Length: 530
Ligand SMILES: Nc1nc2c(ncn2[C@@H]2O[C@H](COP(=O)(O)OP(=O)(O)OP(=O)(O)O)[C@@H](O)[C@H]2O)c(=O)[nH]1
Ligand SMILES: [K+]
Ligand SMILES: [Mg+2]
Image (tube, rainbow, N blue to C red; front, side, top):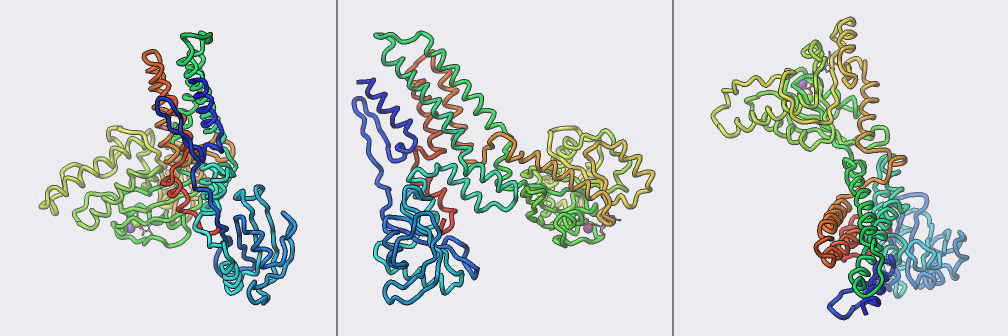
């Protein structure tokens, strides 16, 4: 009985595709399994190219009535996977709608796995509207919901969930590196990795269950548990390394958050304007010009960066300026990269042997302390604290941060001074002048290098974790595996349950096991026609 049970259970777990529709529950003696009823039957259609006037628009159909629709509009079903020039007629009036290139993809060799067709028509809004109206008039055809084509592709085993997410990211990719990462994921990079781990864990689980069921009566190899432990440990180690990637893939997907920080008037806004090549922030000789956070999205060397200019940091009694400083500190806390701007005239002579990350960390926490004190005592508007909060480099080291140091206004320095100071400063300090442009090319180069380090190279590095959703399930999986090791010598049955839960977490990532809620969230961001 147990052997049969295991075979069936394994079948459910291993048959990646079937498992989509195959859920099982176990009570003490029997297994119930059933097919999900979510197999779609209607035939859907939508404009898959962007809306608005364009040369060519693509209307896509999927479902069993696609061939019927072709017959109604073109008078025939065209040759599979070949572009055929056809006249599209209104099925009711036989009026000519457009001349189109028609493609016919009989299932299962299609994007969704169902019978599919594409109509490449002229991209005028009236043409598109006339063809969509004609399709809508056919019985059994309904307009597609957002992401419905991809959802069907998933339901029919054409894509797993990570590939669906890769496809969504590819459509939303705005920079070259994002495109590469998304494409890699859409091609099945993460699916392979996670399914590989899951298959490995399922094999181990089968061995543990065989051990539980037969160890007393039959010949089970003595070292089976030892082999399982080694194999699970190997997967666990790989998973831990994958989780420990400093959020590179997630950063590339969402954009690196960089923040420009420094005292008033050092040229923070001038630097932002240089980076985005437009006057995004107001520059003026008045200290305290920038109050709000000024945020701009940039593409730096193919990587997405969200850069924020902030209020100059100082002990201010002005309520609005204080609020600006609070916002700057909040932004600094969340940023992946902090760009500290200094004024050459003020700090140029004092740059050697400074540990900037630890210095900035403690400087910002002192600023925060000052801000909080100020908030608590309403009466302190005209009595700044006694502590000296100007930038000086002798503060106590605290933490290690990603900091890029820019020394601005180096045009005001004597050439000999600049040379001497830059020789003694650490290699990561950039001496620039936003006024004359000197040093800005090198700064850009250094900045691009840092951003690349933060995101990783999507082509050469190993597969990156790209989504919080994946991280969530992987962390839980890792926890179950740890519990498995800890429990194994006490209670094999409970340990086996932990292993089973670990495999389930991986199945939730790829969608081998899925719930409607998760699918709704994933497909929600898709556009109509995809
Ligand atoms: N000589 C010189 N002046 C500069 C340079 N960069 C900026 N400035 C001037 O310095 C002043 C302050 O520049 P901002 O960019 O407004 O400085 P900020 O750090 O954003 O100032 P706040 O927003 O007030 O904190 C302006 O008058 C700029 O023209 C530079 O490289 N050399
Ligand atoms: K200013
Ligand atoms: Mg400013």
